[in-house]
Image 1 (spheres, helix red, strand yellow):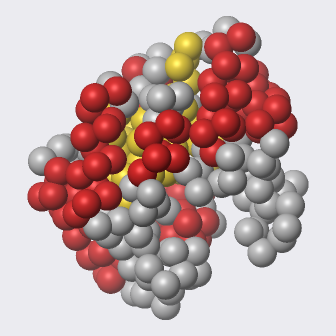
Image 2 (cartoon, rainbow, N blue to C red):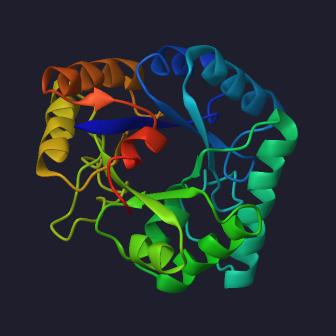
Amino acid sequence: MMIDLNSDMGELADGAIEAELMRHVTSANVACGGHAGDEVTMRRTVDLARRLGVSVGAHPGYPDRENFGRIELPMSVGEIADTVFEQIERLIAVTGIEPAHVKPHGALYNVAAKNEDVAAAIAEGVGRWNRDTVLAGLAGSRMLQVWRACGYRVAAEGFADRRYEADGSLRSRKFPDALITEPAAAAEQAVRLAREGGIDTICIHSDTPGSAQIAAAVARALRDAGVTLTPLSAALGRRVS
């Protein structure tokens, strides 16, 4: 079994946490200046990923740095497509790298999981750059269906450090138990997700308290369970999306 282990990065002013975290993952989703990130963090994160052989993806979100992109903005589908495209292009211009995949951030991700128009707007924005790429989104959600219909390869994502609702959505961060911060518990959830199937990539957020320790525990538990950790492109190579 092959699975990608990813983390949302380029979001922290202090790069020490991400530097340790990146030793345990196979893909890094880099903030493109919308919800977080600037030229310094983009270059730092991409340079580190290159040195460690970690695949790089673009991580666009609502352009709302004040709220870290975690609040839905009243943007039209055209505006969403515009900002997604602009953020990807900025990452490329600053770092010179062509992202291997695109994963929306925060509220944009959660809204797209249920709102087909928003999911289609994200696909439109990505398509202005490259339609032959991978879009990563919540396993079992509507956004994956929309993106497949638009002709994209998709990656179904699970979360080691987030709790789920009964319908498969992520528990809102407004609840105190939304995050899983105990490394052993996160590792147990990651192994369960892998064994249940239907998951191509598992995420650990860099801003979750103890994220580096969580990532180490998750990576170790997955390997012990017989999972080969590999960048997303290789993980998807085992099947046709």
